[in-house]
Amino acid sequence: MGSSTITPLQILKTYFGYDSFREGQEEIIDTILDGRDALAIMPTGAGKSLCYQVPALLLPGITLVVSPLISLMQDQVKSLNEAGIHAAYINSSLTEGQISKALSFAARGVYKIIYVAPERLETASFLAFALHTPISMVTVDEAHCISQWGQDFRPSYLKIVDFVRQLPGHPILSAFTATATEVVKNDIARILELKNPNIVITGFDRKNLYYRVEHLTGKQKDTFIANYIASHANESGIIYCATRKNVDTLYEQLLKQGVSVTRYHAGMNTEIRKESQDDFIYDRAQVVIATNAFGMGIDKSNVRFVIHYNMPQSMENYYQEAGRAGRDGEPAECILLFSPQDVMISKMLLGSKDFEGMDFTETEQVRHQDARRLQLMEGYCMTTSCLRNYILEYFGETTDQPCDNCGNCHQEFDEIDMTQDAKWV
Ligand code: ADP
Ligand code: MG
Image (cartoon, rainbow, N blue to C red; front, side, top):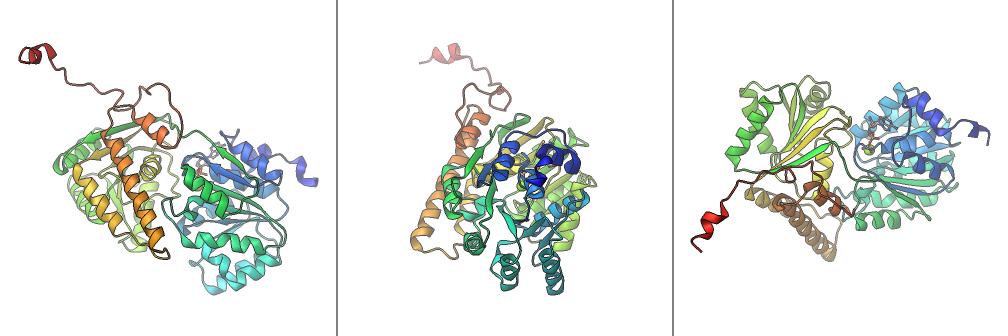
């Protein structure tokens, strides 16, 4: 093992400029370097990318990373290239000419890491390349996309395993997600056919996040947001809305009030959307108003607040979106503005969900699950107990004491004079 003189820690320091590993990273890296399949379940912002990028540099062949989003691949490849690591992506944002060039470079061993969309694995040209080039590892990022029970189910993820089966060298498989539920975890391991995987689950507690739920009507929500932004000038924040219409309305309002604001939703022109995203990321705009189309793979460390204008459809969504706050480890707030109307909106959105590729029984099962998830999301908005513990228990962790660092733990209830009332009983 000639290259074994270089350690993962040295790679971390030399290429990524960090001094130490975070929780879970070293265990995953060691597992992979031992030649064993790995499944890592780590919260958003925990540093999952490094867990496959570091071993990719130590393995003899190429690492293929399957990723669901073009923007995500672009960001990752950009920062790898800036770190002096030879990486590329092959996806539909390239022309046919660019794709064949990238593939011929790849076949000559120019790249250590190649990002691809799952659909790419089914194409003849890609398969031809993969069959004739040593591939050491196949990494599946955002692996929950493989499960019908997870958020963001992507049928094309089901094809990954067919591709892997055809590869001659038995590459190592590694899978990464922030979705921790038991069903999704088991689906990933089963559908990807992971062999005796080391499943590493790190804690889901984000200690620097302060969770809070406010029960407000529509108008009150607007006032709350205006006041909040006014008293948090210069702090970067995301406001999530359930619908594009809500995004546009709130955006116009805040713009009129002179707030430095931008917006993001799937109904916008791609270029303008990218520009808006950059305005936020590079601090040219203080606040972004967005639907849940915003955020996957976005790595902005100084987000100080994430406000949900509407209740999301599940705790998975909430945890992931709220989790974009405070990635730098500094205190940040996650505030959910709840009104009963939000439940109606969620039901409506779930009702119009696309069940393409599923039969009747499967569709019914998913509907049932969605309804259950929505109920548990409502439960979060209704509970008077510790919000942090509610989240942790949802993701299967056992909790002990209330956290003393959330809206419910700090709630100051109106003093009610029980003795006065009691007189009339
Ligand atoms: P995830 O995919 O788990 O959401 P990322 O891989 O995008 O998280 O990493 C989140 C951020 O943490 C990135 O800015 C990354 O550079 C940083 N990071 C990862 N590992 C470390 C580490 N060991 N030390 C310091 N920063 C790290
Ligand atoms: Mg990631």
